[in-house]
Length: 136
Ligand SMILES: [Zn+2]
Image (tube, rainbow, N blue to C red):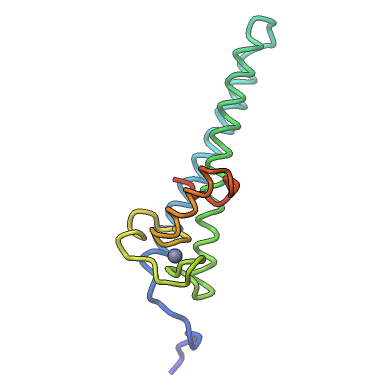
């Protein structure tokens, strides 16, 4: 017997782990592709007064887009960490299991549907900050 499998390691969520890893890779790739495109655009266009506002606008879109990607990436990394620590698929608010249907739709879901809705309501009323909303 030479299996080095750790005791207590649950291969239960390997399917989701794979999905999450692929998604993380996709987000990382999209982020670096955008970065590369941005650098190329910079080199291509010699600074010209007229282009400046357009450039700022593009920069804003770029940063904004990257913020969304960063947030999503963090959610995914968090979910992978929860798989490692055995907390995956458990609502962080009420400790109830998160339904498989929900995990298929949002594999990095932190909360069950009920808690997510309650949190979304609290965000809407300004009781919670946006941080608690999940990235899509
Ligand atoms: Zn819950």
